[in-house]
Length: 278
Image (tube, rainbow, N blue to C red):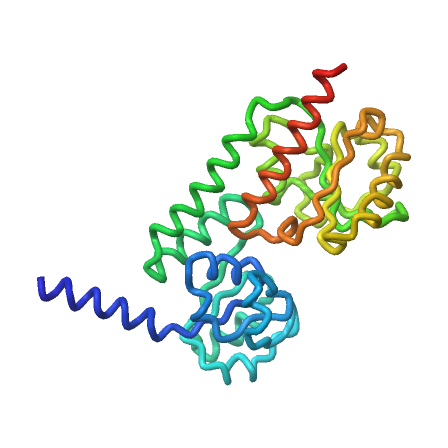
C-alpha cells in the first residue's frame, strides 16, 4: 500500500512540475484537450486554439523556432512533429527531453493522443478523444456511396494552374474511405498534389469540398469562391454538389478532426437528400 501511494505521489509531482512546449497547432490542441493547457510555457505563432493559446509565449513559426527562446523557457518536455529535422537534431544534441509525432493519418493522430495520454497520466481523457473520432467515422457509413470526392486546400477565386488538393496519404483519405466513397485524386506519390483545372475536369468529381479556413466568417467571400468552382464542367457543378468548410480546424490534424467529420457528414446527407428529391 505504501509503495502504491509513493508511486501516485511521484506521478502527481511529475505532472505538477511539467513545463511543456508545443511546436505545432495540432500538438498544442491535443495537449489542451488532455487538460494540460496550464502546463504549456511556450508554443508557436500558429498555435491559436483554444483562445488561451494566443497569450502563451511564442518562440517562432513552423520552420523558424528560436532555440534560444526554447531553452530559456526551461521545458521539462518539448512536443514536436517530425518535419523540422534540423531542430530535432539540435534538441537531441542538447539532450532536451523531446517527444516527436506524426499526425498525417487518422491512425497517427489517434496514436499521438494515446501516447500523450499515457505519458501525462491522462489515459481516460485520451481514450475519450479517440472514441469520439471512431464514433464519428462510424456515423459516415451508408449515407451515400461510390462517389468521387475532391477536397481542395485553400482554394482561390481565380482558378490557376496551381490548385492544391488532398492526396492519398492524409487523414482526408481515411475519412473519404470511411464514408464508402473514394478520392477523386489518385497517385502513389507522397508529394503534395498540385493540379490544374484540366486535371480536375478530367477527374470529374461528384462532390467538391473547398477547405477555406482563412475566410472563416467571411460569407460574401465564401459565396464568391464557390461561384468560381461552379463554372467548371464537372458532375459536382452539374448537381450543385460544391461545398465549403471554412473552419480553422479544417486543416489541423488534432482531436478536432471529429468536427470536420461532422461537417463532412452534413455534406453527404445534403447530397443524399438532393438525390432523393430527383
